[in-house]
Image 1: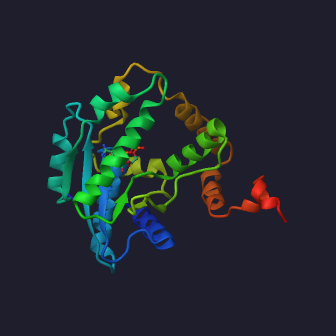
Image 2: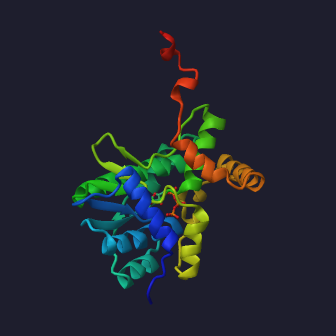
Image 3: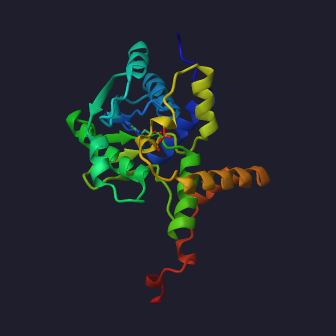
Length: 252
Ligand SMILES: Nc1ncnc2c1ncn2[C@@H]1O[C@H](COP(=O)(O)OP(=O)(O)OP(=O)(O)O)[C@@H](O)[C@H]1O
């Protein structure tokens, strides 16, 4: 069966790529593939871009297994069917979690940190110079408002940055909306792995209410101001650092 990928997704990918120099000639990219709708859209979009782009790049999709008996058979079969190079990177993150996590600290952030480390080591194993993550505009908005409300920080998710180990991390979907990615998976009847696969759900802790609250707040904002996300995207590129209260700036 062939995959239908919308013009809108491909044009957003191309524009974001050009705007932030994400994928360049000769890159070998490790694509983090959780099996969720976002990273699945990402691998299909990158495969299509590989076919169309005037520059050459390679990629390999890598799924980090937490060592909790996950079943990736459908994901493996899907990648085989669509000739997407894919491998499972086995870890023992799940066992470590039980020992390492302090009571009441965030389980999700523990898994996300450990997973990031595993993706970086897999990138080294596979000789990749970049790591692509499937975060989208809704993630960037949630991250921005959660940092603002709960941490007193103005911070979001960058389209591209250099990690301490020299690897370049890129987020090709960062200007796309979550609903576009969901529509891609639904339109193509792609079987996705959902949030229930998040290992933190297996531990007896409070649900991450902060994210749910923020999502709800943003949905309400968008209802009241339909261009909310377009404006936010523009604002992320239009920052007046000097208008804030940074003490360092006032020795003038
Ligand atoms: N187990 C995993 N193995 C490899 N990469 C992962 C894994 N989990 C997450 N990632 C990468 O990190 C990105 C962000 O993860 P996060 O858990 O925030 O997203 P998600 O909502 O699960 O996204 P997705 O729909 O792609 O699963 C994913 O889009 C993917 O690129």
